[in-house]
Image (cartoon, rainbow over the protein chains, first blue to last red):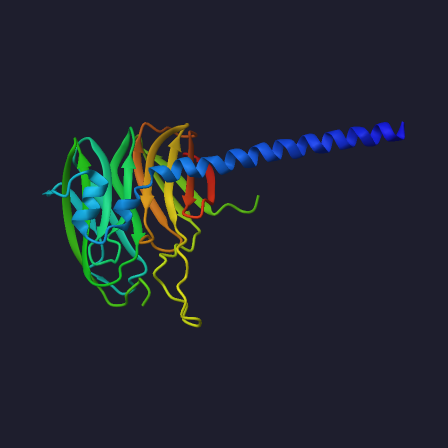
Length: 158
Length: 105
């Protein structure tokens, strides 16, 4: 009886361990699939047109009044610069935020799915004074707007 | 699991859901140097953020190290209703990830 009980416990334990192993395996696979989608070339580009080319397939953007960029005129701390991009354009597919003076200009690219509105807000780092460019892809075309932000203390290394 | 690294709020107003989220992450660019040793601090930043509403992706964000430490993100979408599920997950460049979900209020 006693050995039988032990055997049962042993079985139970090995079964749970097996389940955990499978879960961990699935967890390991997922990030690789996601990382494949991350556009390495665009995020390593050192110049704004290169980044746009790699990201959107084109470096040409059309200035648009329908895009509003909310950012401070003077950022006291470049490590945290609040940026809001708001657009009234129809059929927005993605919104990219670019800090033109940064070592890596492309900061973020938001791919908007069904139902998402042309609005994103986040906080970025800025190495030095420069333009913040919001690039909106709508209906297959690229539109942009920019705003100058003066940075008094840099946020990239310093 | 330890406490989630993500704080998320989703609020519905006149059919438009505003999602606000805060993540806890160092967001190292890889270009910064350790002041004591002079060595470069390896890059460690969130690469992708995915937000789902009732299982359907409404937004994915690809980031570089240029997003501030402990990132904040906010966006809006239509089609959400109160008590719907909103799920947010991130994956960083070392393969770590975290996710959390909340109900639309």
